[in-house]
Length: 123
Image (cartoon, rainbow, N blue to C red; front, top):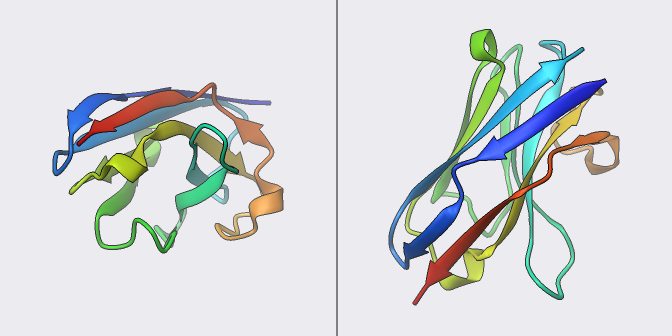
């Protein structure tokens, strides 16, 4: 089993920045991919970014590319999401998820999920 705990959400003005953290515990391996997803009220869950721990391979959703950066510290079992140039449409609950397949874009393989952290961007 893998446990994931997100932190770092909050309220920020448009154009501002936030850094989210996801700490993993349990049976998680360097071959796993860890990703961030978000869900706004009334909308479907959306892929944001993902990384594979053993080689740093990354992938981004089109709506955040160039503004968000995912990084990881395997020694600390932590994945970060640096969010810059935030927009009101980035407002959502952000979830961290782990994917044993190691393929960051294989969305159906994200088996483990955190509880989420709220990000609110005011205009």
